[in-house]
Image (cartoon, rainbow, N blue to C red; front, side, top):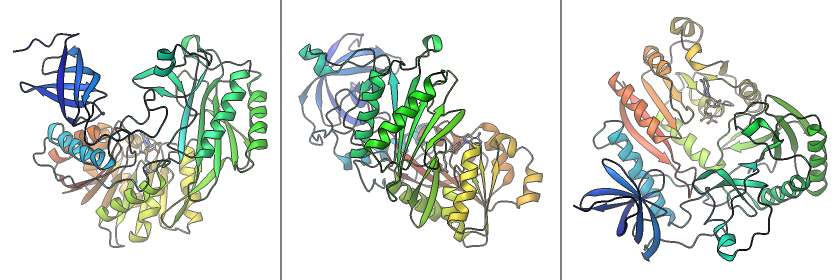
Length: 473
Ligand SMILES: C[S@@+](CC[C@H](N)C(=O)[O-])C[C@H]1O[C@@H](n2cnc3c(N)ncnc32)[C@H](O)[C@@H]1O
């Protein structure tokens, strides 16, 4: 038996893709996860970690190219942490994601032969995002080309862009991203030029100093409306600085619908503010999903792939199997998008959500779409569901519950209460197949069987995959 110690170099045939984009190779039946390796490649790799049941390696050289390799379109591909699979043919990305969902349901969900349908692909595989979040940093990632050519032109202590590949502490300057739109790239360029020269520095958690934190650009792909959201720390001269930036942006891009300034005073590196200042327009934009128009505020969740969301919501509506007679609970409802999408096929929908702005938008969205049978409850679900009898007296017992939690999945107390609510059918929309599999296992121990799972690819070229599962009593 070969001793796979750290540093060892060896040649490997990469067979498949594991969840998270590492290639999977086998040596005498022993699994080796290879970073930056594609299925079908033969690579020279170096072991970087040895664990009990597997090893990790990184690819040093491609000895034989995969038949499924495609030339990446983006010039930042080698350095960017954004689209790690851009060099893998899209149908193979989809097939890999279907297998990954099935494997997770098997291993974490304890389901043998899980009923996972072929992945529904994204209608667009480039420029598909309606929202991009760029970070400011004092630690710029030096690109592989810069290092190889010994040609460092940009300052090392300023960056506005995306996380570098496998390096969350470093930010890669992005000039031309293939995820949002050409205008988004231009806005990014203007903001970078302005902030790079500005005396205020990017924020850093070390010492909790500096100012610039995030730039979030949202575009209504179907409406053409554009929001620029500048997230900063709160320093005395900061408000004036963002005001000047807003003026510079509007002079160049009159098509920007709204500009907001969010103040994040906490150390948490999130692009959400505790205080929002509207500098231009109304502070929100609109987007259309299917037949419905939705209002989006800076701090509300909204699916980032508009056309993908239409596919996703159609699957959720189909799996809900509604006849018009049902009471539906929509847990983690955000701005009420799924509630509204299924509303015409239900007697009533009750949505639950923790973010006040999202609940406010949900009400506005009902009015915008002339939907009268949706109601929204603001609060943390684990508190809101605590008193099931009170809830069901108020809203009636749900026949169908749709859940769409954040990546962490459902809180155990929410799972318990969901069982107590006892719907006939649960439609689980998930952006994380690992926590989905964990929660499905929990639900199946309580009498809900997974009937089918439909992955929908909302995030081409990345490791992410959305899944809709339907569980029945
Ligand atoms: C993945 S999003 C789904 C939103 C919506 N279904 C959609 O498709 O746009 C998850 C939502 O759960 C909300 N959320 C997170 N934790 C929550 C909690 N403990 N209680 C209620 N809502 C929560 C978030 O604010 C977010 O809007």
